[in-house]
Length: 508
Image 1 (cartoon, rainbow, N blue to C red):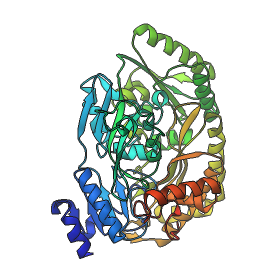
Image 2 (cartoon, rainbow, N blue to C red; image 1 turned 90 degrees about the horizontal axis):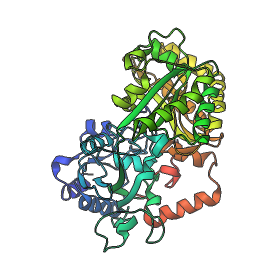
Image 3 (tube, one colour; image 1 turned 30 degrees about the vertical axis):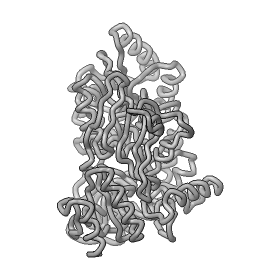
């Protein structure tokens, strides 16, 4: 290992390379409590050239490399699978390289956060379409593209962040550098369009979960922020999931242009209010589901018409509008004006002391299907009551099964963050290995259950990618093609080794 360390230091400044045991353990984690492995080295490269040399070295030494953006991922995508290898931390590569105001395209280094990018764009009256994942304040643009991320605001209007992608600069696992889109023509001065010059090679790296290349530069379309916006929040009647599904469907069928539309299920509201996480709703007598929307417009007349149409859908469904101000419980205004979208998605994490953490996964599903998935999650929870009770006896708080906020994305689809929250094996000063075993078994079980509803996982990381292979969810022909592409661009499987079970017999 000392030999590899010396070779890396010849590429990257010694200040940005570490084999310190505490640093390595810090990079063996993300937000889930499951330890998959500890890297040998952590590296923070500064540019494409350094990454190219690192990937060449990794191939010559047969050392796996795992790319890490913001590190907020819930499914192990940015941490090693098994001990050893290199974690490539992209945070130093966070520059805005060019803003093209004529073509409304921004080019950035892939390690920049969605928060930093949108703060800079706001000075020009612009924003990205989807503002990244729910953790967008620190999540990286490269990570968002790697996951088809949604959640940071604007998803009902713009869809996943990959929808606004124009082009990529990518270091392939063997060290070569390619550019996609209009820049595939070497005579093109600046990115201006994604499609053309042959097949859409950028699509290979969208949602690849870090197995086909290291994204170094990303070009995105950006949009003028409309001058007018309205936001309303509603309490919901009984059977709120069915009511929310009906509202989402009507919005799409009537073609109403919404910026965001979101449903918070009853259990989320009840537990959050009980633990002091939703002070806006302390005065609500009935802690039931919440629905809210945000619309934008270029004139007051356009805005008023959108609000009229939406209220015409929502109010007849026996939903009750809260007051217009944040103090009145208007979560939608807080979400949009105060940038609450970067806190919404993690609202039950850490609500209970002692390491309360999520074991969840994020997927797309048709609107009409999500209520039945939520019902099945309740059934699943009952089927695993004894395991839940075991955790309760040790940690004094029962795991919670369900979904985070459910939001409208492009098409007649919603994003569903489903799973359960639990405790890690280290609790109250003692180690409880049985909790680790229960957590992992339950996580696999709930992911398999939801997979069989036919959902589309978009943030797969290591956990879901391997589970899909283990349970035979991929048709053999599809998996064979994906394996062939991986083998072509990465013959030694150095990048993201173990994901999709493409190397050895890694077990979940």
